[in-house]
Length: 449
Image 1: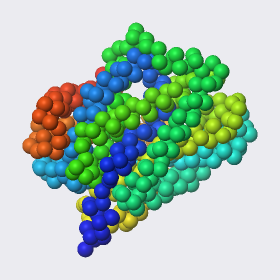
Image 2 (image 1 turned 90 degrees about the vertical axis):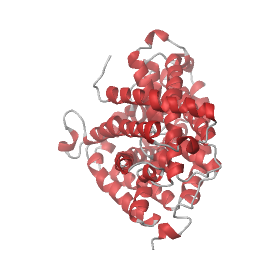
Image 3 (image 1 turned 45 degrees about the vertical axis):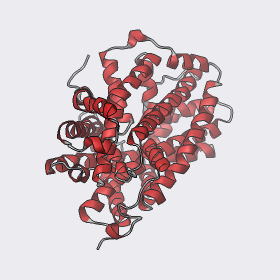
C-alpha cells in the first residue's frame, strides 16, 4: 500500500489548525501581482475610487467563489479535480476540474522564475552589489538573459518542495505561521519608510484621493479581474486547502478573514509603492520593471538604501514563496489521490517537472531567440496569458456552475445559516457566473471599451 494512504502525516488525515489554514490561504493570495500590478491599476482608474470599486467586486465575485471552493474541497476531501466527484458531482466535473490542476502547475513553472529573481535581488541588495552600477536596466537585462536565473529558479523550487514535502501541519502551516507574520512586519516597516520620504505625501494623495471621473466600464472589468485573481480563485488552491480544513472550522468566518487579509496587503502595498515612486519621480505603471529596475534606483538614493532594498526584496520573496507553496500543493495533492503516491515522491517528481517545463520560459528572455519573439510575446508571456486569462476564469466558471446548479449538498457544506445561504447561493448562481464570464471576455480581449 502507498505511503499516502497509511501515513497520517502524508495522507488525508493531515489537517490545518484553524489559524494555520487562514494564514496559508492568505499566503496563497498575497503574491507578486499585488505589489507591482495593484498600485498602478489603482492609480490609472481613480485611486481611492477604484479601491472602493475593488472592494465591491471582492464582495460580489471574490468572497462567494472563495467560499464555494473551500466548501467543495472540505466536502470532497480530495484534490482540486477529485473533490468535485467526491462531493457528489458527476464524473464530467472531475474531468473539468483537471483544469484547476493543470493551471497551477503551468503557473508554477514561470512563477518560480520570478521568485528566483527576488531571491537574487535580495542577496544583491544586502551585499551592496546591486548598487555598484547605476545602470539598473542593463543589470536586469544581463541577469535575466543569462543562465543564473536557472540556478535561482532551482533554489526557489527546492525551498518550495522542502516545505510541501513536510506535509500540511508540519510543512505548509509552519512555513506560513513564520513567514506571514514576518511579511506583516516587513510591510509595516517599509510603509513607514515610504510615507516618511521627502515628497511622499503626493504619492499618498494620488493613491487615496478618489477621482470618480476615471471610473468607467473598463475600470469595473479591471477591478473584477483583480478581485478574482488576487484571491487565487480558479486555480485549485482553495479547493485543495479546503480538503485539509477541520469540519469545525467556520468557512464563512474563514472567507471573511482571507478576504480582509488580501485587502490589507493590497492597501499597504499601495502605501509602499506610491510614496516611493512619487518621492523619486518614478512612474508607477512599469510592472515588473518597476520592481527590478526603477525601485533599485530609488533605494540607491535613499539613506540605508541597501538595507531597505534588501528588506523589500525579502518581502517579495516571501510573497512569492508562500504562493509557490500553494501552487505546488495542488498537483501534488492530485497525483497522491490519482496514483496513490507518497507525498515525498509526489513532490520530487512534480518539482522536477516544474523545472523542466519551466526551461522554455526562463530561456525566453534572450538566450533562445525563437522563444523570445513568438507573435509579439515571449514564451513566458504566452504561458502567463493562457493561464491567467483563459484557464483561471474557466476554472471559476466550472465552480459556479457546479455549486449553483448541480450540487445538492451545498447548504450543508457551506455551513451558513438559512438567510446567508440563500444570499450566497443567489450570488453563486446568478451574479458570479456572469461576472466571471465578463472577466474571461475582457482578459482575452473579446470585449473592450
